[in-house]
Image 1: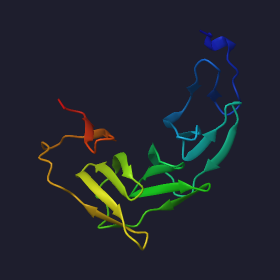
Image 2: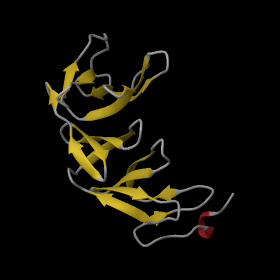
Image 3: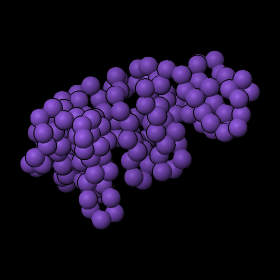
Image 4: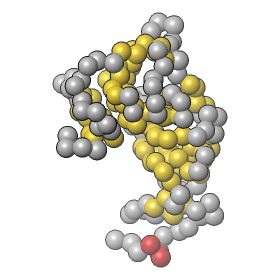
Length: 168
């Protein structure tokens, strides 16, 4: 193990090293399937390279709340209101009909055309339509009132797993 005192510190408050990495002031951090590391730092979305440098900074639709890796590269981004998709260095707001109610707290990608999204109002399935917009359906899941969904996983068998603030 390497002690923190042995790790390089760069000027913007990021502390990075080869054995472990600490990011100061970061609210969320993810790695894409292409090995890119992205983080929310203040009101910016930043991409961090393995040589400890911030390579990209985006704040098109800030503030950002959560990040979720997108299959095939890029990110799904939870915005103040709705969702965005990071591709090509820009965040594009998703058109969802009807709109997602409340701030998104978790996203699970089933396939290229289907997302599962959790918000304060429950769980919704989004399907990408031919025009590029997303249609939203909220199936009745029988979740107890006030249960917050913190994480989701869509597994290879098609099951949707929900991580909550309650007893499951």
